[in-house]
Image (tube, rainbow, N blue to C red; front, top):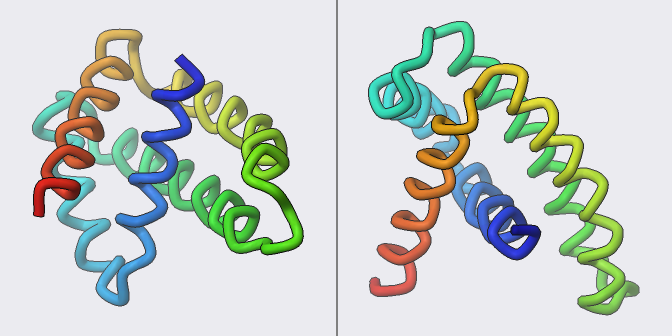
Length: 112
């Protein structure tokens, strides 16, 4: 479960790191609304939560003074907090669908 969450976060970091993240966030919000059947307000909250968490995790991943294991341990509470915060806006089914969507994104990205 934690490996899946870590993978989701890592994929999200890659998504938000592009120069055109603003445009992609709007597109991501639309995809979230359509795929998860959530309101615009909930989609805004999900995007914001993920963006905040990814900013913190990205900084940890760039810290060259930490080993991979230390990075994972340091990112773990951030990931857990993100999941807890997301669960305020998404049902268990929606969380599962989100993970499925991110897995598909990850697969598409590795195949390119």
